[in-house]
Image (cartoon, rainbow, N blue to C red):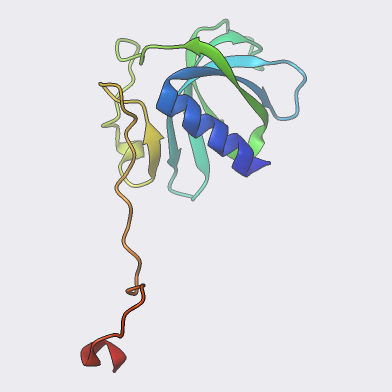
Length: 135
């Protein structure tokens, strides 16, 4: 289930589409604009969103910024409505929390920011390793 939710959120960031979320198995729905998906220092996946409508456990009236823990999102659905990145409301991909564990984030242009792929630790492929590698 978490894999499906992560895939939906990554697609929402990539295509700048709003999402409807259920959080902590609550029946109420929240409508959010996901801006960044990242891994925090403890290894937990977090989604930074701008909540535009729906339920708030704290009683705050949207809109506002809110981080969501992936493991607590019980359901997610991609909506047709698109959004413009909220730079004037404080979003910046250069924030320190995104430096080490960024999975994806909205960008200035039309393309989502994805970290470069990491090369495998050991060479892979249909080749015979050199003598230096066999030792």
